[in-house]
Length: 242
Image 1 (cartoon, rainbow, N blue to C red):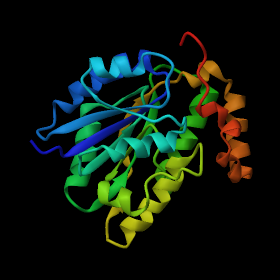
Image 2: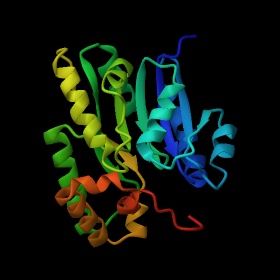
Image 3: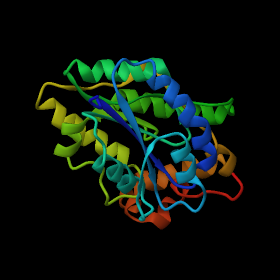
């Protein structure tokens, strides 16, 4: 059977979350009448990430350099699907959102897109305002959140995939370049506002809202800082026993 789409999950020390998200993902995929595959990219994990992925019958590829954009690209290098979906390891893709993304891509008039984001549990009013601001920016400017991006494979390959010059915000650069590629072919970069992707709020447990906000400000004022992994620690930090 032809593999129509590939779901790629970069994973760095994610054995606990994959044990929750992969079964949920498999059930969502069963609602589509086309064949898909799941690829977990073990991004130099020190835990049982690969063991959990193997237990759930996913394809596994190892990427030794701990970089999100490189892990995503490595996943594509073995993908069989014509369409690509990038999902974070701590994120739950619902059947309706998967169907919506598939519908957009299969019609042939969409090069890719993203969707609104929500968290898996209640958050503080301040954090909610920050999330609402991001969702407004995302929809207004067509910036897909890194936890969920969908696209055509030919578009991905034409723009060279995710930039490996950066250690964070690779989804923003990717969104902009894919939009440009799609515009020249009369294909829309379509943000889904009718359904939200549900992702973990764990970073709000690891860092204060102020720390996260200040990090975003620094990256905005000094965009070249994303070229240095040391300055993007919020994207790579994993506390012990989580």
